[in-house]
Image (cartoon, rainbow, N blue to C red):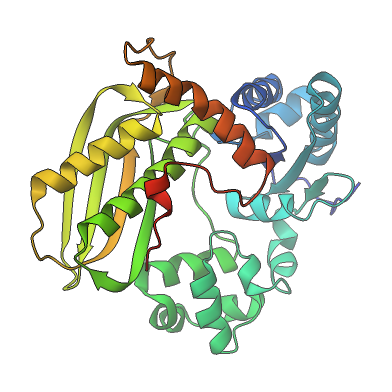
Length: 329
């Protein structure tokens, strides 16, 4: 078993190969048999606090994780990887390095030593842009990032991001486990290489972003109650407009049409747009959609699960409305 001796770190980060919302729900139900403190990270992962469960089961966090993996495989044919750490960041990083045994336990006392030699781009939550900026300054490992003054990191990558990355490099992540709470919103955004005024181009980007969000919501078994369109203009100002959907929906065309209506109603005229963000908000568990009286719409809705499965099976395959694939810059 890939384990570092120790027993103070009791947070699990579980990665799975769940290939459907139903299988993901099976994963969550199995986790709940081990501990009630489970936070879903759809579509395939979860966090869990097992401190209380260890006393009940009379074993270490790594031993309990091994039992969980065996049951997931035996009951649901579901392979999992479990990282164990003192907080969500360390546990998430450990789950990517669990190796053949599928379990890696990083005890609290060894956290700094374990993080230090890892490349900076391996830090949980870091973006490629921020990792590249740090690399330009010779900060190539997490240990070096932890050793640099926080103010220096903030000057390199920005205030909020610099503070967050510096804390995580030092093994600090105070986020609690939010048991049973699914994400309440999800977003997608596109930044143009040049500021644009072309409404057709903006609509194409919105189509692409809502295709991404629709696929994500359906994979999580969630539906949006409202949609927000956020535009960042050339001068740095923002415009945010929210539209409530007639009924909760995870269907791409419902999200897209709502955003297109916002764009039409606002009348940007010659406003130069730099970035578009679409946010699906007030998420609820998805419910069966009433059969549409519009045959064309009904056909599109029935096609969505098929397209989702194709996109999942063939990585990189781009599926969606033709308008979503207009060339954008």
